[in-house]
Structure formats: structure tokens, C-alpha cells
Length: 231
Image 1 (tube, helix red, strand yellow):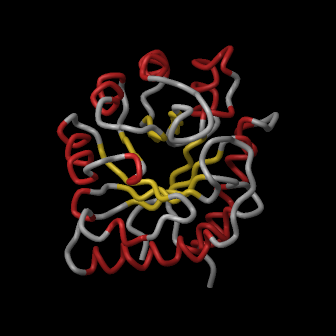
Image 2 (cartoon, helix red, strand yellow):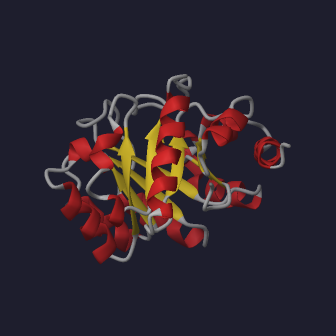
Image 3 (cartoon, helix red, strand yellow):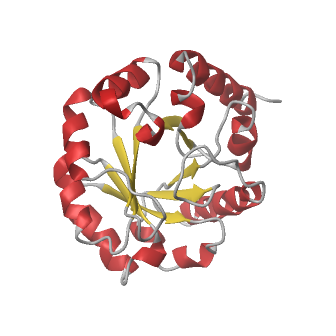
């Protein structure tokens, strides 16, 4: 059971920062659905990237949803800042919040959709008591911190397990929940990731590292289409 159409959300972590606004516009024109915005603090993860000022700067460049992934600890002070800067969805890691339920509620209180991000070794059990507050589950298929890493094969089983969890939740009357995958997503593995149950795909270097963004996105959609229409 899939409750959402496929969404491709290129990560601007791999974009050309010297012309970020133009890159955002170009990748949306090339067929992307969302902009994925990676926030790293050199504390929770070993890298330092972008803050709310950059989110605010690119917001006028597109009407596409901005999907903010907070790899920061603590998270609560940043949530209102990114909501004000124009985020549509905000996700964070359960390990980075002292009170997961409260952080999820804080995101909703500021008018954004909320989600949890699970690292490759984070168990699904952290979702047990907060599914009612979650709009999206983001599974990391690499260890967070850097772009351009290879997909961890064991993530495929975790995607299947999470899809089963979401489907059971919806069948019992719960709200729809997106299943996003981030890390090493490319043309040659997106079909496997889709077949395992993902509906939202973060691709950074695979898109921004290509000469023709539209060609890569079209090929990704073709792979997804084949899975969805297989006999």
C-alpha cells in the first residue's frame, strides 16, 4: 500500500553554493518536486552547512516545498527559526531531542509538517508512541554528515519494515505518513528503493553532479514508473 505519489527532492547540499538561488530554480524547472535542505551543526554530525538565513534567502526562488532536515543538537530552538524562514516540512533525529513528542508538536505549532529521521542503526521502536504526530519518516541510507556516500544495502530491509509499519498504522485508522529515503539514491538503485516501499527520494550528487538535471530526474521517474506498473 502506498498512500502518496512519488516525490523527488534534490538535496542542495550538492548544489553550487555560489549560485544557490539559480540552482534551486533550475532543479525545479528540471522536474524536481521539493527542495531538500540539509542542516548540519558540526556537533551532532561532523560537518557544518546551512542555517535559517539561507533557507529564507532561497524561499522567494521557488514555490516548491522546502524539506528541512535538521542534523543538529539540540533542535527546539531551531524549529521556529526555520518555520519563519519558509520551511514546509521539518524533520529531526530522535537522538537530538530531549523530548521527541514535544519537538514534533513544536513543529506543528509553527505551521509545518513534522517528521523523524532514523540513522542506519536507529531502531524503528523510537516511532512507537509518536506515530500520531508524524507526517513523514526519513530513513538515512548512509550515515549523515557528507554528501556523495554509497547506499547502505541493509537499508532496503529497513525500508520494507517501515513501509509495513506505516501500512498497518493507516489500516488501523491512522493518518497517512510519507516514507522518505536519503543517501546514495541514484538512477541504478531508485527502483529497488521504490519497490521496498519508499515514496519520497532525496538525491543530491546524483542530480547536481550531472550535466543535465532534467535527464537524471526523468530517468529516475522512469525507473519508479516501471516498478509501479510492473505486472
